Image (cartoon, rainbow, N blue to C red):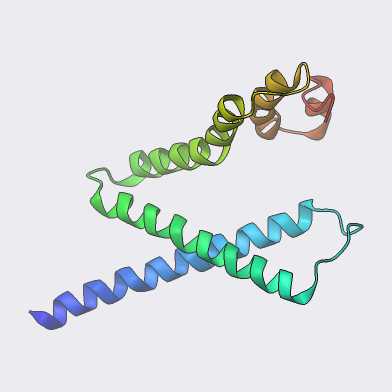
Length: 138
């Protein structure tokens, strides 16, 4: 019996580390692709600190996802859609709500543009983004 329990725990730990590494790599690749290379490069010590901070964030996010998924009664597509919805809400809506609540002095018209931003991210092409003028003023 202890060997079976050990195997289950080992599998969960391996999956947890895989999700952490996948999140870390995806975040680093997307950030590298979207950020301009014309900006000043950080010092090696700052870059190391930033990578360590990103890895810690990846661990925390993976821990939360692991906890929620393991405790969930849902399976299959229902679980996948719920996790994606929560991930989108935490990653997109929460920062905007925090900005609206905590920042009291915004330039005129900035707050509506912050709430239009997710719609731009979900647009199918850059032409549609330009046509809907989501990015106007950014």
